[in-house]
Image (cartoon, rainbow, N blue to C red; front, top):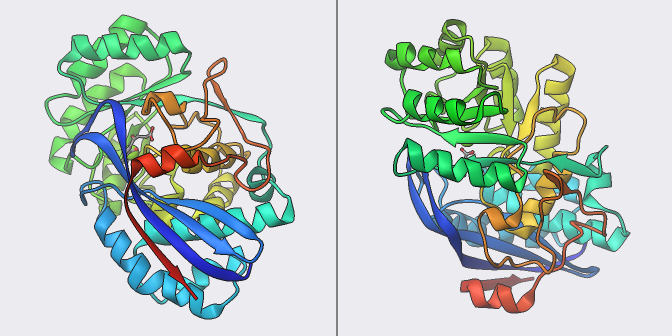
Length: 368
Ligand code: OSB
Ligand code: MG
């Protein structure tokens, strides 16, 4: 596409309820929305950083700065770029994968809209809807957790993931198992443990969990392999899988037997597809993670999760799981426990311009 400019906005979307993980509590989703301005029309993308560098080293103001100072100018200097060239063009700049992913998605959306082709078809989606799991934050106590999980099960979510941290692990998991029996259940530690906690984590083995997600630190590939040998529960990596290369290393080391794929964390949807392809070839199940996406990233995630190797339900929930009002005209809804893969051109969703403006707290446009 012929690039004319990029518009970046910081949005603040209020959450329907606070979201608590082992690393903190969020009440407002701060996110960057990207609009690629091209000779063939606009495209939209989302930079999924959070306000604070607690999940990963990236955070909103850092992404804002690197995008406007380095990434966007280098793309605009080229004049025109194909979606498949964006990652290579940004490669000299180290890290900042979420920022790169958001820019690439905006270019992809613009190019596919211009071609009249859907994002799902482009990435290789083989399903028209995907099973929807929900990520449940740490609640006041296990009884409150059971109430919250009951609400999601009543809505039809087909898989429950609960967040855990030291002191809120075995008891919380037991409460959910006792209340609901053999539902598909998994836990996410967001790197809150060390190998010294292996005995506690082994206690989770009796709950027949689908997996335990990211118990140790991002760079603990060897320790994860050691832990995986100690546990019956399959170890799944999230934070550690920062690229296709990291995925290859994790599989070679035996650090994970399941992989959570998040396009933002790995630098874009094209890199996400490469990880999918690698895991499919290796017989390793993958699922689509989430970063409390708006309707833009959520549409892209639904399409990605429709690839054949995504054999476990992902954190691809209805928009209403996080938001009362989204920035797209037709937010993702839950239908019989599934979310539909959009079929329109590009991402297949349209921006609600009034909502977008209402949530915008900062805005910057760079043009050629
Ligand atoms: O670890 O999967 C995670 C949200 C923000 C940062 C990290 C994670 C999460 C979630 C929510 O679990 C997933 C979702 O968007 O539903
Ligand atoms: Mg996770």
